Image (cartoon, rainbow, N blue to C red; front, side, top):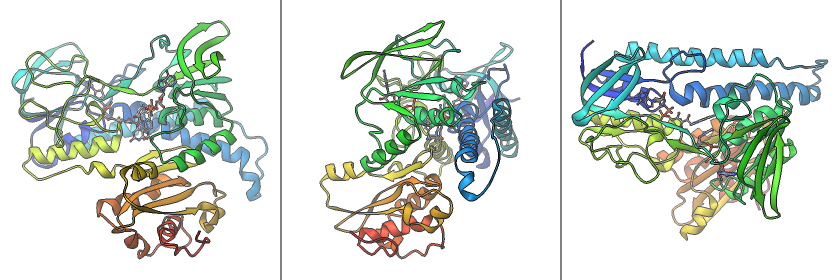
Length: 475
Ligand code: FAD
Ligand code: NAD
């Protein structure tokens, strides 16, 4: 192996591996260093997303949703099943298989793009040299014309609530549970709390989510958040807002969680406690003295809009830099950086990053919320369409939720799209494309949508913006 590369990427998650692959496709010599170690001691590329995040969580969401449908929804279709039971070991085995196929797929992609995978630890030295420590402890100094830092993030810790890997766990631990806890506590009603809380609730756990903020999903459109809370409550997910957790003690009867709310000091006893209060950028042992790379006060690597750090030809992408901690945001940044290293023009459109929460109903949005538009002072118009009025949603027994389109009054510019309902995460792609092309609501209105599809709901919401909806009364 050569010790010198055009590009060395440190971190093989969804930000780092696309950077490496695109750079390889562009004819550059590339190495990608990753040190992710699984519980069973094996090493795997793919980072948080493939090993302990997006992919395993969606596998469990799918299994638990199917179980829920079999127990609660099949009968209405006339399907008689008898007693339905859940084999948690089989569910976890399926998930592990999906994770393994996905992580091994990265090595195949690296081979096709001529990227050299290096399993171990990478540390940036001055002048774009990289100290690589292989898993057997041997060290080597590599050099590169460009270095891309993609070291990702780790779960934030709550002082007073230390992880013990058994009763008090992080999101990775919550993905690996071997049995359904009777009482599951979750700290944080964010994306992780809601997705993983939903998984274990559907499988039978009593789930209580403690959320410090008084508002539920404050980053989402208010109407969407209100609708979501209604559904979670109906599903029996007990969400306590304004509940600030300060401590937890592990005892023989479970974990006692101490929190304060507007009535004062409270305690909750659960069998397992998941701490999901956000994630922190990860830069431990990443930067030697004199690299010129600067961290901000919250620990993120400081970069410009093109993900270039303060050090010449050193770039940083993904969760370790500002912006939402989302796999697709990291991927776009990784690809942009590879393109720019190869001398091409490339940008990331940070105004069109979709958010998806994979619960049931699913939630997805892009652009501005109604609250943000109101605050901006720009005159706006809104159109909504409920899935209750969608023939496809009715056929699917999935009529909860709506599509909402927000547009500017002056030039009809599409400002935001908010969807809660079946397949929201798939439907939002049309809205992302519309924002990317700076579409107007009229563009959406004039686009033919197949019938009967869920996408018609978005079309009707766009029509409703100008009181032209056909399948629902315009108000
Ligand atoms: P990471 O995925 O964290 O990868 C960084 C990699 O770098 C790791 O493998 C790490 O071991 C390695 N590394 C770090 N330092 C070094 C070093 N010095 N040397 C060698 N290797 C190093 N996002 C979505 O968009 N959709 C989802 O549905 C979604 N679901 C999620 C569910 C859960 C439970 C969690 C926890 C997260 C989820 N996310 C989701 C967020 C998503 O996983 C992250 O945004 C994404 O993984 C960030 O990618 P990254 O490449 O920046 O970092
Ligand atoms: P989050 O920021 O979404 O939510 C954390 C929640 O914890 C917040 O609502 C916060 O108010 C609350 N909190 C903080 N301290 C608390 C305390 N002491 N007591 C009670 N509540 C407290 O973070 P997360 O859910 O941990 O997710 C981390 C990251 O992973 C997010 O940035 C998210 O984008 C990403 N992620 C994305 C997806 C997806 O795209 N579907 C899925 C999972 C995770």
